[in-house]
Length: 129
Image 1 (tube, rainbow, N blue to C red):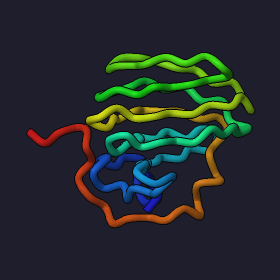
Image 2: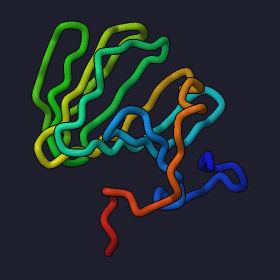
Image 3: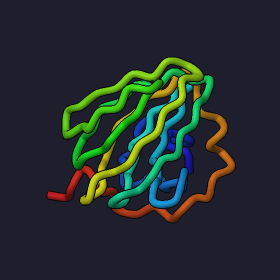
Image 4: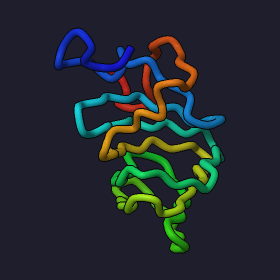
């Protein structure tokens, strides 16, 4: 299910996560010109170096990540942010506890539509209660 198919509102736990890489899933909401994704990374998960036509901005919600963007590398904790221009190579390694990140892409990430979908399940964030 893509969030918002039947309503403009949806709770993140209702969004079926899609597998982006091994140990990396996204809960994605598409609009006409922008994609918003809650990314969940397993402990020590690796996002291999890649690039794409979309601009990308994000912030780390919880955990740690070592992020490399265009040759610059930084270890990030909660509240760390990044911005990636179109077609700039970037990669990520999640910390020992994994990580949760919030990212926005423009234009939309229509290349994710063919990725494996899982059944809706509780997200790592926000925690219930």
